[in-house]
Length: 431
Image 1 (spheres, rainbow, N blue to C red):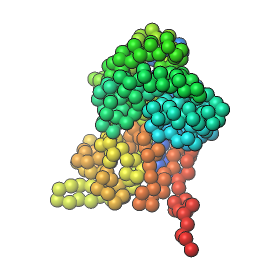
Image 2 (cartoon, rainbow, N blue to C red):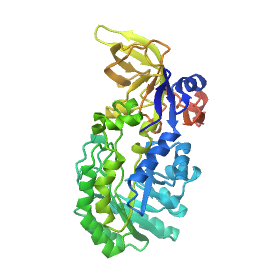
Image 3 (cartoon, rainbow, N blue to C red):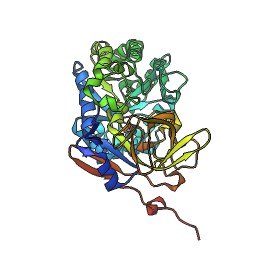
Image 4 (tube, one colour):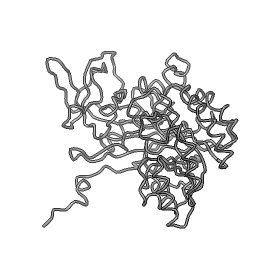
C-alpha cells in the first residue's frame, strides 16, 4: 500500500501535487510519504500481534534520512544498524541504542566501543574472530557485551544473487553445522553475554515459505541454546519484498483483491507462515524489515532533457542518473516510470530512459513501452524509497539530491540539495 495516485490528472503524494514539489525544489529530487511509512509499519505490527513479545527493528540501511528514522521511532520501532554512523543517526533522530541490533561482517573496534558505551541491545556476530574482538573491546571498556550469533540456515531464497544472504557460500554468518560450537566458545569469553540468535536469508523475497523453512531448520538449535545459555530472543531478520512492477496500482486498496496480489507477499501472508512456530519458543522475537517499510513510500522525480534516436534505439534523456539511483544498473532493478501529468492518450512508445552519467549502465529502463515524453516533461520513478538515496554518490561530480517528506498537506525539505561548493568541501591542493 502507498499514498501515490493520480487525482484530477496530476500525480500526488498524499495531498501534495508532485509537480509543485518539482517546481519548488527542482529535479532530480526524492519524495517520501510519511503516511505510507507509518501505514506499512503499523500493518506489519498488526499482522504480528499474536507474538506478544516482539520488536520490529527497522533495517535503516534501506533509507536513513533522519526524518524517516524519527517517524519510526515515534511508532515504537527499534533499529537494525550496520555501522557506527547508523547508530549515531538513530540517536540524533530520537531513537534508543537499547532498541538497536548491530549487524555487519566488518565492525571496527571503534564502532564496537561506541555501541557498547551507548548501550546497544545486541551485536549480531558474524565470525569467531569477531567474537574475540568484541570480548577484547568490552574488557578494555569494563563492560559486558550482549551478543547474538548470526546463523545461516542454508535456505535458498529466490532473489537476486547480490542480496541473497542465507546460503553457506555467502559472507554472512556462521553455518548451522558449526553454530553450537561457536556459541560454546562465546560462553567461555568473560566479557560477553549470550542474548539471542539471529538469521537473515536475503532481501526482496516474495514468497512466505522460505521464511518458515529457515525457522524450522533453526528451531532445534534455538531450543538447545535456550536451555544451555538462557537465550532471550530469536531474530528472524527481514527480507519481505515489495511491488516494483505495476507499483502505482498497488496504492489502490482494491488492488489487493485482484490477481496481481500473487506478485507480492503481504504482511498477513508472512505472519500466517511464521507466527505459530515462533509462539512455541516462548522468546522475544525480532524482525528486521527495511525495504517493506520504505520501498513503496518514495519516488524519484526527474525531468526529461532530450530525445535522441538512432537507427536501432529511441532514447529519452532525463536529469537523474545512476549516481542518484543505482538499482537498475547494479541489481537490474525495475522501477515503473509515471508522468507527473497523466497522459491524455493511450499512446505508448518503446524507449530507453537514460541519464547524463558517462556510463552505458546509466539507465532506468531499456526497451520499455511508456507514454510518449517530450523535453520538459516530468516523471516519477516509482518504488524508490529503499536503496535509493542511501546508495547515491557524487560520481561525475554530480551533487547529492534533496529529499522531501510529505505528511498530509505539508511537504518539508528534509535534506538540502548539495551545492558545487559542497562537492569540494574538505579537499585541499598541497603547496
